[in-house]
Image (cartoon, rainbow, N blue to C red; front, top):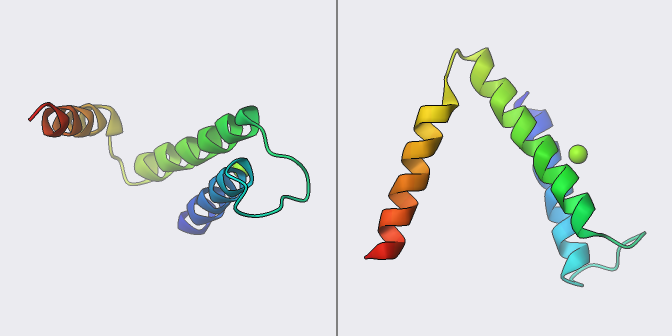
Length: 73
Ligand SMILES: [Mg+2]
């Protein structure tokens, strides 16, 4: 599962590099492709969490809150 996660992260990176023109893509990258790859990555993250019996929702909301507070300061 961790290798799947890394593979999906790599796919996200490839699309972002294409969108930013940092790497000539084999075919043009779109924001929709980025959305799909981010969704793939998020899915794997939730599958990994579930495998270890973790409920990510509460932790994730706390993380978002921590970031929001960091930017408010
Ligand atoms: Mg993917």
